[in-house]
Image 1 (spheres, rainbow over the protein chains, first blue to last red):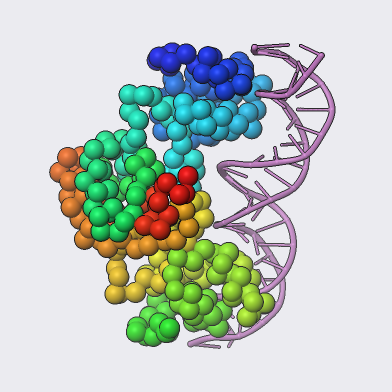
Image 2: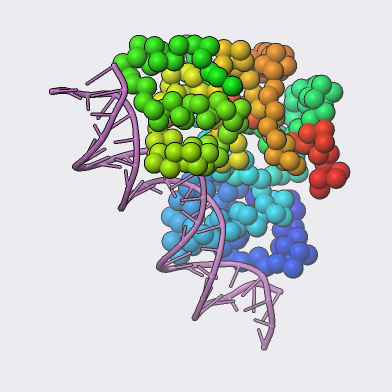
Length: 146
Length: 146
DNA sequence: CTGAGTGCAAACGCTTTGCAGACAG
DNA sequence: CTGTCTGCAAAGCGTTTGCACTCAG
C-alpha cells in the first residue's frame, strides 16, 4: 500500500522540515502494517529491516507525523497506538475487543447522534476522534469469554 | 462523608482478608476526596496525614478494594484515576474536559441507546463502565479554549 | 501464633530528553 | 554551510515486585 495520495515531501518542506530516510521508513512501515499499531510493533518491524534506526527516532517520527496530521494516535490500554490518518477516513473512534484484542473502526456518523445528545443535555462538546470503547466483539461473546 | 453504608470489615473478612489501619485510611481518604482521584493525589493526601504509609501500599490498597468492588478504576490520560463505587451509581462513564480537566459522570442510560446500536450494527457488546469521552465542557468552549 | 499485609528499595515498561555528530536543504 | 535530525545513553514517569519484618485475627 502506498501513501502517496498527498505529496508528503512537499507538505513537510512547506512546514520547514525535512524528509529523512528514517521518516520515510517509519511512514512506509506504518502504512504497510495497515493500522492500529503500537510503537513496539512498529519499532520491531522497522528495526528488523533497518537495525540502525533507534526507538527514539520512531517516537519522534510518529510525533512529527502526528503534528503534520499524517498520522493519528490513540491510547488503548495504556499504550499508544498509531495509524495513518488518510483523508478517506477523517474522524473515527475505536472499538476494542477485550476478548481477541482486535480494534475496529467506528464510523463517526454513528457517534453523531450520541454526541448531539451530549451537547444538548450536558453542554459537552465531545471529541469525535478520541473515543475508545472496550467490550466484546461478535466472535468473543462475554459468555464464552468470561 | 462516610462509606459505612456497607459493613466493610465484614465484607473484607468474608473474603479472608484483613482490614488494616492503612486500608482504612486509604479508603477514608478516597471517600473524603469525593471521586476521580489520581493515585498521586490520593497518596499526597494520605502521606500528609500519615507519612509512614508507602506509595506501594496505596497502590496495593486500591487494587485490593477494586477487587472487592468497593472502588472502581479508570484510565484517563495515561494515569489511573479511582473513585468509590457506591451501589448508588453502579455503571457510569466519564466526560473529561480538555479545558479545565474536570471529570463528569455520564449516566449509563444516556449510553444505552448508543450501546444498543453498537450491538445491532456491529455485534459489539460495549462495556458500560469503561468509556472515557474527552472534549470541552460548557464553560470551556473550543472557541475560547483553542 | 501465623500468614496477610506493610515499608523499603529496587526494577519495571513505556516514553522523553540532552548531547555531539551527521546529513538534507 | 546551516540547523534539522539522528543515534546513543540516560533519565523520567507511573506502576509493580521481592524481601524481611510487622501486626490483625
